[in-house]
Image 1 (cartoon, rainbow over the protein chains, first blue to last red):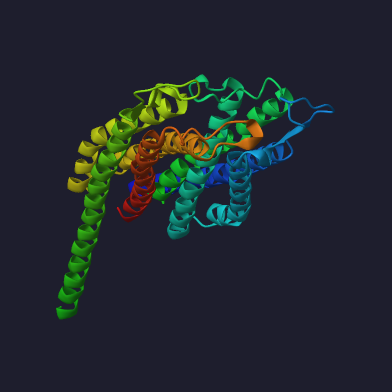
Image 2 (spheres, chains in turn yellow, purple):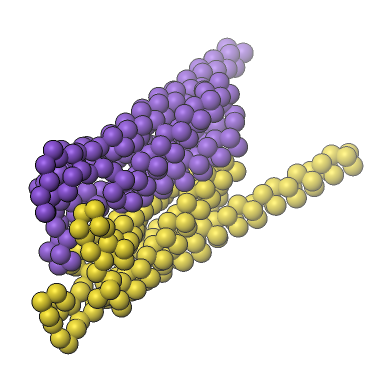
Length: 186
Length: 186
């Protein structure tokens, strides 16, 4: 009889520990989503407000540089804004997962959307990074000249705005791994 | 007694059906990996062998165009080659998952690597697509001219080589979703 009670106690303790870990995973998921939301929002705003105007103009130096001059930078702003909106909308589901442990289907659906959003964000950030690198270094083979010599401030802002996006991509990878772990432990 | 046997039969049939579905998911996983491996291999080879030489040269037209002229195209080739190699190495694990249903931990590890490889492939394809789009259209704001007017064959080959990569990205998304489903059904 005593053995039975002890076994029951051990099993109860182990179940409680499991639940605490599962709740911890869900709470980390929630926090990571908020961080990624702010990261992508910051990226979108930093790129969207990047502009540099010159009070003078010569034959070779243009008046001003804005993000919408390059379609890849526009795509970057749109991708970051969409991902930030998605992350904000996903927060209620993340809270639901903290409360109810069993919601496997909604976890799968959320992880599926996370995967799609990660692809979108990676595509946007990578395209913008490719153009930013070209703007910094130019390319002699194609006669594309580095524009960052003239537009130093604009280029610095553009390069800085990539950081939030790459933080977001890393967080999406963690979110997918957390979802895999949470589903396996349910 | 009869009821009990019937219940047992129903449960046995349901277990068999479950197993068939699980095995089906693993077989689809295996096939998708092979398709993605050939897709990325094709992309790497198509981009790596893209070159165009002119028998003549003027002041404005260069002698030849190869993928290594642009660092983003080199990155594209490397990313595709790495992903193709990873997919080939992951095939034994995929076979293991067809045979043993319970291997949850190895499924999580494989899905984690899949996520990382998806990010790498998306970054490579997106950077190459950004440069290919620039080569096609140029950009008047930055005085980067469209080089595809001169290098038509090179540009067509480059654009075509992107297809295999984007097929690969789609397959990686499917693989992650399949892993989520497989882990939830174990």
